[in-house]
Length: 424
Image 1: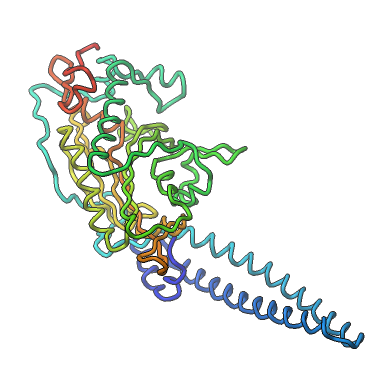
Image 2: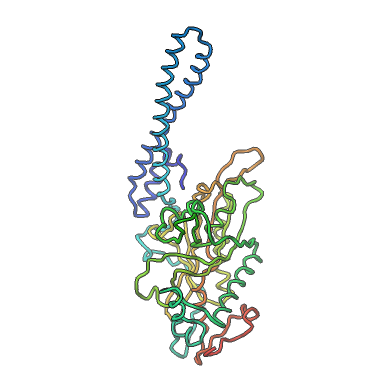
């Protein structure tokens, strides 16, 4: 959420940000009007409360019965005015808060303008795509042939967009999660094992609500929401806290399954295991001082790249344009892994700087010095990395002519095998 002071002092900046995102800036004027109305009403309420306090003391000292009754009647009118204005203030504040929750973060000045993902900018490509002497097979055929991926039983259990990993497939998934957690903790992240179910307020704090309400799974009888990403519980690790400056930066890494009510249509984007209602992900998350935000983002991007390099997966880096930028992000870089069987670049991580957007919602602040003023921290997040697309890249890029798949060297000890044999 943006600071209300930005709407008062720099409305043109927010309006420009909305235009760059392709959204109507008229909402900024509505917020400014409501804010002025709220402040005017609050000033009057406080004036009347002060008058009531003064008069209450005077009534207690009034000896003349008629004068006392006159003052009491006057205060009854004042109390009615206070009640009316407090109700109006409550309504105005609720409307104002609701509108402010709908405003996305302001894109950074260096974020390229664009209407949608087709205008994202490819910054660089790293690694050589595999050169096969045979026609590579896509994972939706390769996985079942290997005996590691079962679509039919997944659909029978849970419906479309679900699958079962078996044997070496399940082991590969588990090995990847363990490898990524160990990799990031060795680079200074603290591992967290959070709840996979959170309260609604946690969704608001992380910026998932109200924007993505239709994409979230939740219990309609109790305040239970399945996490769509570990970003949600990690955002709330220090909710309402005031941190000391020397505690920052804080680096967390967490594994969670992720649950999303994806509104998916038929097509190449949803074939196989590229997109589903449940998937696993290892998430990086940082709380930093504002002035360290850009440097920490660069380091997080390097951490994500390092995982792909260690796995030997060719990848590229994209900078998202304004039309594809996430709701809470001010700048985002995507890591896309090459999948030779699909012949596609698959997003395996979005690494973003949220500025103070989430921290303001979650009330996570810090002091630069003991007794000093408090201000919001900055938060950053990124997948480190997301499954199952990393698994797709491994299966498709490491496949052999005989139908087997070579296991990346960094996973062999965990897997207990060098090769997933054909028909395993």
